[in-house]
Length: 598
Image 1 (tube, one colour):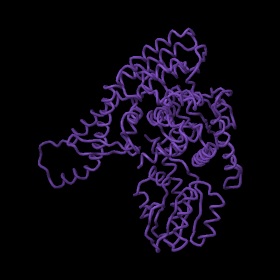
Image 2 (cartoon, rainbow, N blue to C red):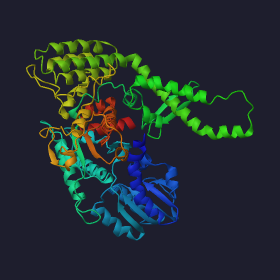
Image 3 (cartoon, rainbow, N blue to C red):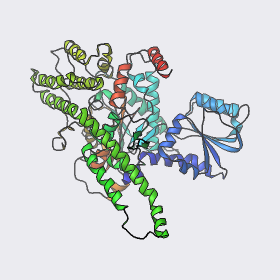
Image 4 (cartoon, rainbow, N blue to C red):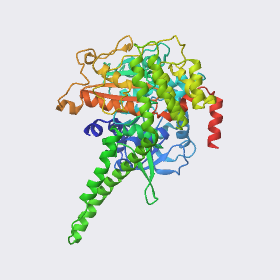
């Protein structure tokens, strides 16, 4: 687990914050107040605890937009995004009656000149420090980042969008701050699509902004490309992975259980309610999250028994000193037992869903894909496709939830590269979503074929043979992004399909290519992770199963660290809701939101 704590994005971000904001604080012995906006609150809470801030003489953390009492004897640190709203809130703290002795201002990203000049002219005498620290992304996990922007999906893919270019510009700025934080100047490539331009547009924006950012570094020398590669793809490049039922622990839990803000809430047998955060502070979660649910279900009960047995005391006289020793051990014991109880409960809930419905759905999904994979390119008369329909119909006739039926229909359509109008109408009638066809039809906005003529025949991309890797019959699907990761590491990406906007040095041009499957002896160099980085950004949301692939490929290759990111992390349900909403106009969306919050 050294890779998580020593090399994770969270640790790198916290170090960057310490080297800028905290270092400046140390120069003054005065205790300070830290004032955050919603984004920087999320950013800080993702990579440090309140105790870390206390250790750095920060006693109070406040919300920029909430009413605060003046503390004239204290200096305030403002860590915020460079937006007009944040700047106005800041000016409100100093213009009429100053709330604090002085202000140390840190922006997550480049502050536009007009906002900077406004601050300088209206309350410059209170500003002691003004810095841009280039962190406008969230470190979600050790190898996963997001731009904290689920709304980007609608902005980019809705036919009614008014802010597509500005959203792509913002995402590009955020990706550049990720590269800056990692001290990488990567070569940039994108997945070329015949009917979609977003990946190309975003790649061009990122490449241009990276060049400007690195034009001159601190020593006034132009920074050259590092041995890193950045790949940009659209969500439509693999529509299957976000819809399929996944049986690895993390992906399954977020799909089937109502986990909000990474918090799992559950009831104990005595009726009391508990909650647990599923983050990398929970080392058991880190150990189990990518394992198959079958392994997790077998492992946790054993752990609970072991830890309980280890604490049972033999019949002997309890002295005061022994009692004191036991009490000293209790906090860690309690934490271990709590973690194991949490995961016992979560795994049990996942298995309950599996027994009720998911097992049957997985059988149908995997069968559909196995049959149609065999059919494509070899059986143009459609005989195998009819077999898939035979697998699909029992799912539609069974009383599964509407969402599960929609998922099954979509998987069938994806597997045959689109279906006819007539066939789609029959499927929609079976699912009884005649008034909600957008769940299916709106996938066309992502460039995914839904309707095709009966004569149309399309060859699907060649996939890697993973038959030797298959361990569980109901988990045969591998996200397409894993093929991309392995091909990139082995320097096998087709330059026509993956055009270069800029190239990185020799490590990615053949000489440094490493097999993602070869047995690799660990060395001191591997432990330091001095190899190259592969960064992949998915426009329109990333799945937990795709996040898992980054860790699997990194573990297999050792000489290359894979980092994945997106505007946000999605679940099958959230994606379907977002897809359905694409055809709504902005006014319709606003009305619905108003009604739901009323």
